[in-house]
Length: 176
Figure 1: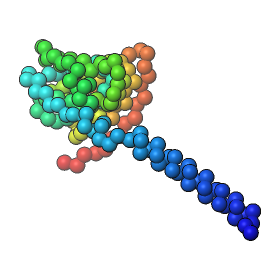
Figure 2: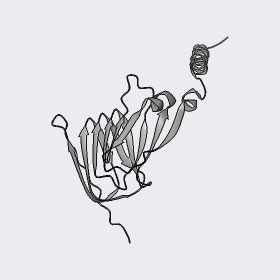
Figure 3: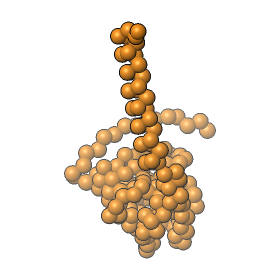
Figure 4: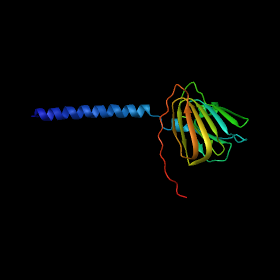
């Protein structure tokens, strides 16, 4: 004859097994392997003429690089990447990355070798792959943007009146 403790333990094991089985079946039937990764693409765009000014419209992630001037690489969902429009006129590159539906994050890699002015209209992030060398870079933000760049030189970051700037600087001495 089973004791109350043994019956209670058996009921707990049975309930635990059913919960695990239900959770595993949910994962199995809701997971579609590779769908997100298959639709993710990288597109390299040779703008041609180098640009000093850039205006980016849309919620994106910008990564500054030391690639040759005039180089832009766009990474994201295939449909989103194909809808991005850009034009380069009078040393100013304008990238329109506005989307009605946000499927996935768009990352735009921008050459910063000749960059002097940047305007971001939208939310996102600005970072850098390497240490960017510049005499003077001005960044103007119209949105909630986290700026985390490694730079040697002078940088000025400003925001529209409706946004607050919070500044954190990490100064490190670079060994020559």
